[in-house]
Image (tube, rainbow, N blue to C red; front, side, top):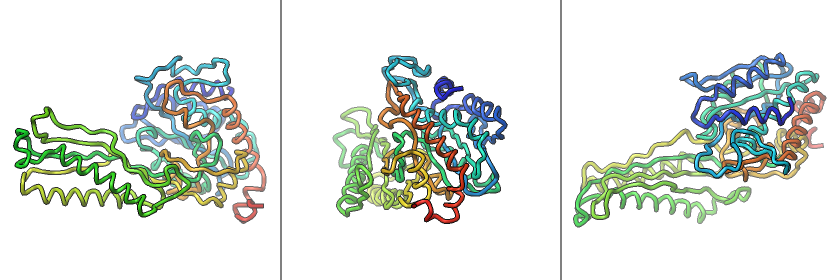
Length: 399
């Protein structure tokens, strides 16, 4: 099968984040095992979803993980000009379909080059690591990264996360935490606002605290110029509460996210916010004893990525991608999760993030070809003595 054939098959599985991915993961499993490679599934507790990992090559330390996610975002409400789950070639050098760019294009490149991996004389192994539920909070990434560490006797050294980066090596990403805050006040006639506690009014104070905290970080020059914007951000995206203009709202809630540069700590900022909430509760319980503020996380925080520009993996990815310029991104991915498991990690994959999550998503054939070239160069690297030698002497790869 060609890379386009494989991509067409992958796109045909309309697996949204949060849904079962067993159909696509079992297709990948059968495809990989048809080349004599043993695969291992890492199921969720309900066993209706699973990640997959496998090793191609020798049982030797120092291998490279190629990682991607199998789920996509919804298409509902978007104005598609083609069937989003039918890979479409319009003759303009682009392949249209949901997930073609983010990030089934990278997975297709990996699978298309599997025959060459199997037939090569690899001196270091290549691993596939394909997850589920990345699009709703990178939920399976930590378990998949741990499973690889626990399953194999040898230890992989590098991880390449194939998110669309136009084949640029990405060495940094912001961390992200998504939260929900619920405020419980007292209902009443709007003329009694001094005697009641409006959940909407209190929510507004909390939202202003978040904005002021972001401005404080900026004023304190908590900058990392590799990112745009170069500071941590706090943003409220959903606010809801109240039933009428003349009724004091007893309930309100808002959803917000926190995206941090590596120097800032998600937990510290969240704890500061909760401390302020406790102050408000203490003050207003004298007015209404049932007043409360509750903040919960939508999902576990996704850690940042901060790979040293001189790390071995960076030099490797520079060579195989053909790009020497490094970059960072503000979006979340599983890269930080693999880095926390001890793998030197870089994001690098075909396609542009500008095409992700939108109607008429596409990947250019040129980018798909470049993804194939990167995988082929990786096979060449791991079939030579170069990576083996550089593992023993990290200064060699700088020559």
